[in-house]
Length: 288
Image 1 (cartoon, rainbow, N blue to C red):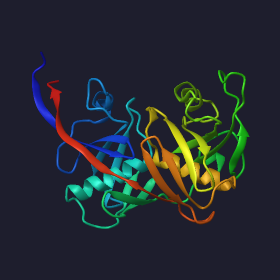
Image 2 (image 1 turned 135 degrees about the vertical axis):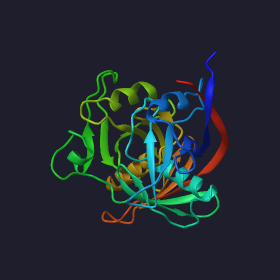
Image 3 (image 1 turned 90 degrees about the horizontal axis):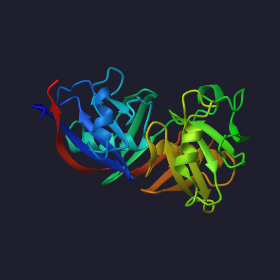
């Protein structure tokens, strides 16, 4: 049996069911975290989670958030994650500010307090230029709306999709029956489609009137998750550009509901949703 040399403190958080393992690089000296991501996030042999969030100092904002997938890949932004990140910072006394700036790979994002257990995030303006999403589905300035996507293995069908970036790339796929859609099979196919050079998060949706949309998410490098905040924002933006919903919409995810507002095409997208701690613990690190 390996002799345990030390124990790694962690906190388990979630936002609308999208769950995270948080490591605090301000309070603790951390080992290299990227090689640990797969082990920590394993639901059978580790703590379990959709992503690993790491709290760091920042030279450009109040704090820096690093994000890793279960496959070890590092990603630009996670909207549910940043709500959980901000809630963690308040719970631990790292900040008492009602609004802070958080450095991410996609830029500085600003979460703010929205009442007990709820956080609003200014997600900035959506990126609609195809080259910046990035996708080869279209050229020019965009937007990429209602474009056929030929997918091998889609039972002879050609889905009509739309794409946008909310700091990370998303493709939105309307489906007739969300509950029976084979999200795992189709999500994996689209995530790795050559039209998306950096891979892509896949949002399967069914509108429910002009103020509500049901959504299931396949996250690149992770698989199906109960929620995706940036994906919900992408769904709202695409649906507003398509004219099928109003400028404020509720996105119903498998783990909860997010409130998304985009007042006009030049405005920032605002997302409000829950964030809370699940439990705390220590993970044993065997001696090298």
